[in-house]
Image (spheres, rainbow, N blue to C red):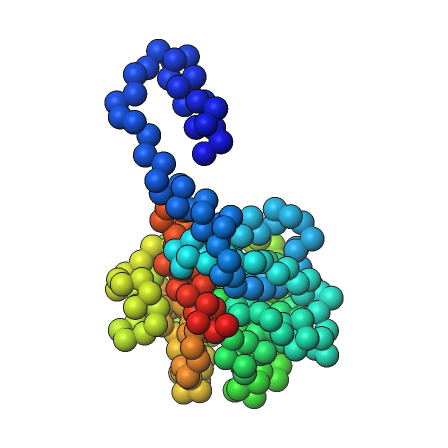
Length: 291
């Protein structure tokens, strides 16, 4: 908007000796600006991670959440909480005025306890929750420990002695035997780029995407162990998105909860101001209704 007022577009056209085929239509951008700057309706979303002190660490997520707010005509206030410093005794107080909780991607053990406790708070108190990549894996671990009573459930990324419900792709069964990966194949096991996922009929995620097959971008090394699928689903945690070969869990959602979704991919990479990603639009809508 500011560039337009300064006639920057005309200067660029003149420099390259080009003629404009049509006048600029800034109506959509004026609408966005009004929603962001003048909207009195607000919703508080907590981003709980270990890199929150780095302003640009979750930049793509920040923008995607804002896009979701635009689509719901509400301003999104981002409340950044350091998961490493988050104590169990402080969770209720720190999340008192929060209408949605997001656990972003990440690596390593540091800050996992705070994330897992925050996820439990969202699950028990029916606060809208979105777990992305590592955030989905933390949701799996929280549910396994507290609902399946698998107290030693963990990820082999940061604990080699517990029950690895999260692990490297090559740690799963092959010909009836468990194959263990090593720390040496750091790059070789990363699932990187766009992958298909098929969505379960009559699921919340299917309603959000309005499609049976989707493509989303991945960047991770560890996967949820498909061998535990039936145990999770019997307790109400549904594997509502799977890889086409049914071997890799892509999306989880919780029954009897207004909005609790975890995804193994990064939907924020595909969100745009004029085309918000449906997951973020739906998440913000749920948070808006939770207020």
